[in-house]
Amino acid sequence: MSVLVVIECDKGEVKKSSLEVATYASQVAQQLGTTATAVAVGEATEDNLAKLGEQGISKVLYDAEPRLKDFVNGAYTKLIAAAAEQESAQVLVLANSNIGAAVGSRLSIRLKASLATNAVELPKTDGGQFVVKRGAFSGKALADVALTTDRKIIAVKKNSIEAQHEAGKTASVENFSANLTDADFADAPKEVVMQDQAGGVLLPEADLVVSGGRGMKGPENWNLIEDLAKALGAATACSKPVSDTDWRPHHEHVGQTGITISPNLYIACGISGAIQHLAGVNSSKVIVVINKDPEAPFFKAADYGIVGDVFDVLPKLTQAVKELG
Amino acid sequence: MKFLVCISNVPDTTTKITFTPDNKEFNKAGVQFVINPWDEYALTRAIELKEAQGGGTVTVLNVGEADTEPNIRKALAIGADDAIRVNAAPKDAFFVAEQIANVAKDGGYDVILMGKESIDYNGFQVHGMVGELLGIPTVAPAMKLDMSGNTATLEREIEGGKEIVEVNTPFVASCQQPMCEPRIPNMRGIMTARTKPLKVVEPTGDAPRTEVTEFALPPKKQGVKLIDAENAGELIKLLRNEAKVI
Ligand SMILES: Cc1cc2nc3c(=O)[nH]c(=O)nc-3n(C[C@H](O)[C@H](O)[C@H](O)COP(=O)(O)OP(=O)(O)OC[C@H]3O[C@@H](n4cnc5c(N)ncnc54)[C@H](O)[C@@H]3O)c2cc1C
Ligand SMILES: Cc1cc2nc3c(=O)[nH]c(=O)nc-3n(C[C@H](O)[C@H](O)[C@H](O)COP(=O)(O)OP(=O)(O)OC[C@H]3O[C@@H](n4cnc5c(N)ncnc54)[C@H](O)[C@@H]3O)c2cc1C
Image 1 (tube, rainbow over the protein chains, first blue to last red):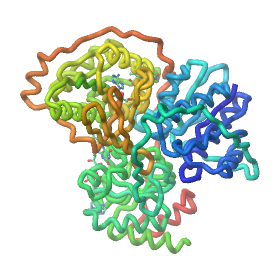
Image 2 (cartoon, rainbow over the protein chains, first blue to last red):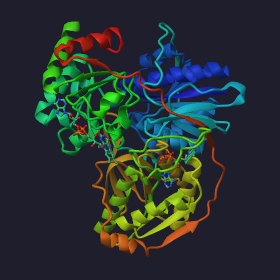
Image 3 (tube, each protein chain N blue to C red):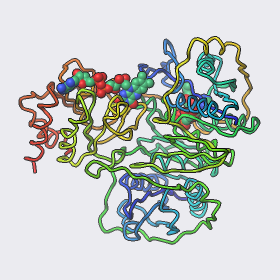
Image 4 (cartoon, each protein chain N blue to C red):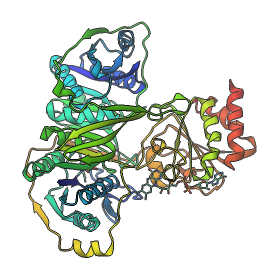
């Protein structure tokens, strides 16, 4: 019996959300009195994989097959299933990312496992139960879900657990092969197109986010959002009407019908705070709202607020961040 | 080509969420249910592709009890040709996926479309389960879907970018914007929907694998701390020293 965690890598680096799930997995392993092993996918370096020891991982399985650099649903599923069998994994942990959900749902069928996505806390395992708390109703509720099969799969929501770093601990890195064939790469991407990220910070992984709504008046004013984001090292986001009218690209749209984020800090500029917008951001740890209308509903969901004109307030904030150093 | 579009019946996006006194179930009293917003992309795109191909059928499928029929009729009014309802409460994602896979097996569908995720349970999982149960590829979440003969070209969203993926029928795709502009029913659609076939079938398959033991509301915010606009820089100090997030 063991706990197996899926680690996503990109350009050699382990993704931040994967450091979080590695920590989650080793804590589950401790609860169950066993060890946590990892299987890594994407483009990784041996050094960075060995550093997963800092999150409490003892061993990392890695297949250096070049076609695994990009996400391939068929091949990833087979590779991870083979790792789960080899390690007799009772619990499999992934990030609740587009990759994690795509692979986790297939694996739940292949491994006859029960699956909890969007998990926000460690499972309760006392008294033989296995109950996972997960987000539901688009951030408006939490649900405790009992997983009732022997094998369990948990996809952990980003930023729900802080990655631990025990300096100096290393994991052993082992070559691993699942004897993948061409057929396993049938759904390999023809092409991968990465976006230009403002300031290089990826929105779904960002700790800090500066977001603009219709109150920004037009795309020509987005330099105010970008300047503050750059000063903070934050990613940029927007409300739905802003991406619908092509002021900003679709991938920045957060909310019920956009992406869901849970950064440490979300700064909303000229956004009214409609319930569908809140659904995508209400699990952010700290919410700041800047709006000229004191009655804007967003203030009810905020931790800090400034009633004022974004065109006046944003430059002041950027200046203040620069002065912080 | 035969399209199967799976629709989920969910509380309207503005619903205030409350639970039954034992906190085990969502309190449906007074709640307006709608077609899951993502599923509207799947439905409209299926209809568009059928129209472009000049033939074929779009079947909508829901796993739910009789109270979901108004939204099934709405999907027919938007332009689906016929509907199937598997007569069962959707107990969990695995249970739902098995029902969908069984219907798909019997019906010989070429393309199975769904939404990215349900806005009530936020599972983001039924599509992968159905693909695996049927042994066919799933592309999720898809932002674009074009067909040429039996080959589909899709844009799949990944964190920070997109993949261009080509798959042959049969396949599963889960849809999200900006795939299409979801259609709304027109008068003629509403009239014809009344007489379109809606078949009710009984569930088959295994027991669910998960069970909600308790629902809860997230912890409430303390209330907003307002900072004077004249003194906006103060906010940054609070974020560093008090909230400790920067
Ligand atoms: C099914 C459905 C799904 C939806 N999904 C989403 C979603 O995923 N994401 C989303 O964002 N929306 C979504 N919406 C839309 C949502 O209901 C709102 O219409 C939208 O969020 C409003 O965007 P906004 O706040 O940018 O614009 P508005 O509501 O127009 O608000 C603009 C705000 O800016 C303020 N303002 C104006 N000028 C200034 C200034 N100079 N300085 C400071 N403040 C100023 C105004 O006081 C106002 O509060 C959805 C709607 C539906 C029906
Ligand atoms: C009181 C109550 C308790 C519940 N308890 C649980 C529970 O313990 N565990 C659990 O997993 N679920 C539970 N559900 C069911 C849940 O609401 C979903 O129907 C089911 O889990 C699938 O939703 P999902 O979010 O996982 O789907 P997702 O994977 O997010 O949905 C993706 C797509 O699948 C399709 N789809 C989803 N559901 C249906 C459907 N019913 N019919 C047709 N197509 C569909 C849609 O196209 C949707 O966009 C409960 C429901 C109720 C009302």
